[in-house]
Amino acid sequence: MPYDLSTQRRLVHNLQHWQEEDLGAAAVQLLETHISWILLVGDHAYKLKKPLDLGFLDYSSLERRRRFCEEEVRLNRRTAPQLYLEAVPVSGTIDNPYFGAGGPVLEYAVRMRRFPAGQLLDELLHQDRLPPALIDTLARTVAGFHAAAAPVDAGSALGTPEAVYLPVRENFEQILPRLNDADLIARARQLAAWAAAEKERHGALLQQRRTDGHIRECHGDLHLGNIVLLDGEPLPFDGIEFNDNLRWIDVISDSAFLMMDLQARGRSDYAWRFLDGYLQHTGDYAALPLLPWYLSYRAMVRAKVAAIRAAQAGDDAALRARSEGEIGAYLHLAASYAQPRRPALIITHGLSGSGKTRHSQVLLEQLGLIRLRSDVERKRLFGLAPTAASGSAVGGGIYSTDAGAQTYAHLAVTAENILRAGFPLLIDATFLRRAQRDDFRRLAQDLGIPFLVVAFQASGDELRRRIRQRQAHGADASEAGIEVLERQLATQETLADDEPHLTVDTEQADADTAMLAQVRKRLWP
Image 1 (cartoon, rainbow, N blue to C red):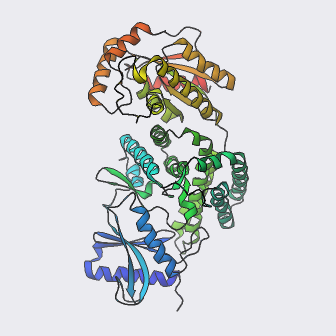
Image 2: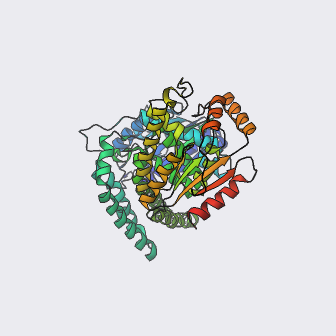
Image 3: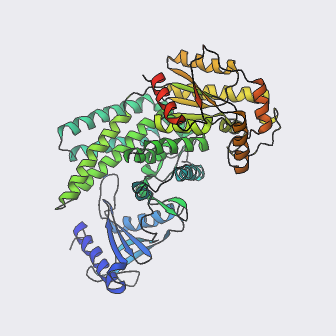
């Protein structure tokens, strides 16, 4: 009898039956995805790969499924070693199968430790149990994983512009035959043409990313459903093992999947928060011209998965209807990333403790901004981690006049590149000198984009209280203390009437609401 998906379905259901006989029905649960079965058995989970060849994935032979089970264990131990145990055979007969050796091998499975139900990040988000601080932790986790991941070998064919574009093109080739709606077909074809044009437009940057070491052995499928909260830490798992070209990718493509997934679930604020945290840790602002392309690609991946699930729905009308709805939603999202953006430049102005970073966080999340923090970029410029102590005296070390000039010059170069990529940008810095503010105003004028200074203010007593609180708490990029504040108070150059600015009193309870309304009105009337 040929071994196909229907035969494997029998095998899996028989495995479920015999495990229920041993442990009781309450201890066993069967889950299905478009490419796998997951059998939850007591404290463990067993994942079996479907005997499919989908083009981007080939599990069609038993030997391939064995090899990919072993690869899955190897790769996912990088991020979740406490979950992934081993690859095990399924032996016996179709009607009487069991996990382990000792008879004819029918199949292979990945054996994992089972984690508590309800701890996947997509579930936590749906239940409104995903706090902002966990997004910050996730950004740090992903940045650290990418930094440690192996870069592609220079002699490999992986990660070239052609290799990067291949799955982008294949998405459209694989989804178009599965679409029946004329409007969706037209939209997919338009997106395919845009994606091809963007690949040509950014060909040199795609190659440069590879040369600079940004093509690495990544996760490949980094969405909220593949991240679990365990002991308070977000652990990515279930990374791609079945296709080297989908795993050896640009780190910004890996991150784009997570950002897109947050936006698809209605949390664009969390998406921008994640990106901001990730960029603060990595400094990878050079990747931003490629971000819309990768975001659109990731939305198309989900559209394709939905199309596959719709085709596999069989008699399940509810699954088919849900999957078809997802196809349209993800195609719409993919198309939104292809739309031109409206860049603008916002710079902050304010003394230490005035709330620049806290309130600019609201702006970047609600308006979809890229943020450059001078405190972070100054540390990066001098080889320090964002929260590392520099040991500099007031006005000395990395806070000397020369170091300050280098920092603002670095901010200007980075800002121009981000703005030319089409993103609205906020620069979080004190900007206490008129000449500094004028430099960035001229940059905006040269680029023909709107410019605004957002000035944050608080009373002297409140500034001092916040600084003492920040120093007591630690873990912040700013090293400014009371002595620095007093020096700023004595030397600052206040805003003039001819400077386009908005003043925000950060001691007011409704400061953020009023600020958002005014910034929108001033920059995007």
